[in-house]
Image (tube, rainbow, N blue to C red; front, side):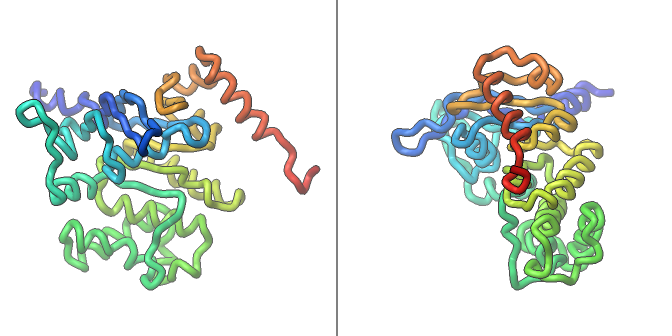
Length: 273
């Protein structure tokens, strides 16, 4: 194996260095450093308003950090240092990187006037420049991956929330992403539909997809995650393998958060009360 090939195998898929993001006087991210290896499933947990979603949005440049560096597959993206000053990349360069950073949101953002397969084809044709025939073939494969082949001709309004989210995942996968980002992908779903989406995500993890996900699904993070990051107040409070962070948290803030999440999970439902 050549040195170059070996470096490619072991270099991080995503690196965040000193990432800072503010909205006016409010500091949302305050110097985030995070390394994600190829094939890792990194679960980001923390209370609402802690900066988790903003962190994800900075990775694919939906939000522009004031400071810090984002590297994807060894390449510095979105901006570079030129003569000691940071210079933003062109919109074309940014779009080219973003095309291969798949992102699945809380809400499905499907085109209501297009069928399922048309939704999955759209960006392939208009962003990647694939022919419609090639895009249709790839879309069929991705829909099969998420168990939605039989719904290819349906419109979003004819699908459940869980089915729409699986289509959104297929749409992202069809772009050949180097990394998949999930921003609370199950939070907008009815409880009985959460499992079908988590099952797709579990399958992607088993196939070696590099994934970074913001989630409140603690059991999923514990069982499927390879690395868990607890964020609060715009900083990483604690991180480590799930068995350590959930089983032996070191920080009091982490312990309090996990205890609170446990109480929420154990609380009786309104129907049961």
